[in-house]
Image (spheres, helix red, strand yellow):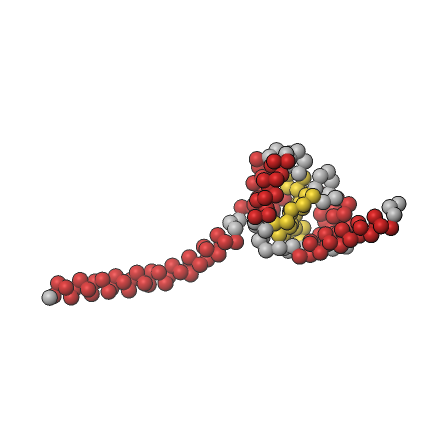
Amino acid sequence: MPNAKVLAQKQAMVEELRTKLDAAIVGVIVDYKGTSVADDTALRKELRENGVDYFVVKNTLLARAVEGTDLADITPFLEGTSALALSNEDYTAAARILCKFAESHEPFQVKTGFLDGKVVDTATINDLAKLPSKEVLLATVLSAFQAPIAAFARAVQAIVDKDGEGESAAE
């Protein structure tokens, strides 16, 4: 049995992990086995640039952190090596980056994940990875809103141009 100091440290780590999980809107758990240091460094850099918190986690600590919550269904996936990617803002970034990385790095694989506090399977994570980023979606929506206004402006300009041609021909 661990001494009281070690036990207190582990309990603090579990609480910190539980706080991070509660704050996250999406999380992806991966098996990082066989990833080289250079590849891992590049992956961490890309995730960090996209606002994703990525770290290696002990399976037992993660299992304790999700114990008694809606995320308890991830416990069967906690075998082997595990790393956790959490995002508090972007629903697609973690899934998109990790699934792309898994395609080009053979032993690396996505185990499971969660979305808005509910555990999802790898198929859902893969579907999430195929969605465009939040910025691209916002740009698409804004262009859809702007299209009628732009068309109206072009029509008004065409009328002005046509009227201008008629006046110069009459003179």
